[in-house]
Image 1 (cartoon, rainbow, N blue to C red):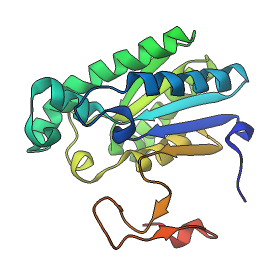
Image 2 (cartoon, one colour):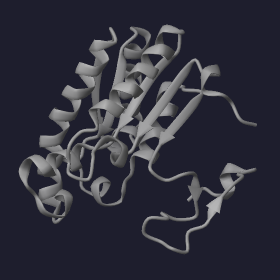
Image 3 (cartoon, rainbow, N blue to C red):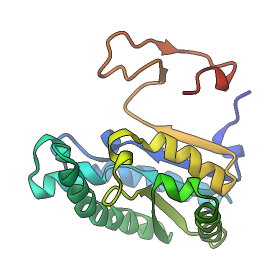
Length: 204
């Protein structure tokens, strides 16, 4: 059964790097402004929305002039993340403020959502922010992470955030049109999955 996003009291919206940052490394501010306007509309209608935002490494790499999008080495990726995250959070805060909304930044690692004590603390913070009408903007803490940068992805993070927030829905915004068996941008053999009758059947 499919649930329309408007029916979800709490909604997680994940945005991929390709939608946030242009190939030249600049923020797609006009596109983001449109998205934030949609978030504001949902918030005024009584929904609570949290955003999982990629893009810090891509944005930071441009500002630092790093090769390979900041992913030539772990050190480059961490430096790009640290530089890009502060710029990205500023954009989110400005655009949300223009809609009369407060933004909050939460940077987490996989351990924060796997260790029970840290998970409960993160969940309490997230739930309090949402109850105050704040829009949390969440990303992996890539400036100190190791495996997350190499193997993690924010789709997985969005699912964990949804659990922590008790959200009823997750929207994944991406430059990939639908669900595939692999990344169609890098794997020509990837095939589109039109229907998922059992979600556990396609789980990794």
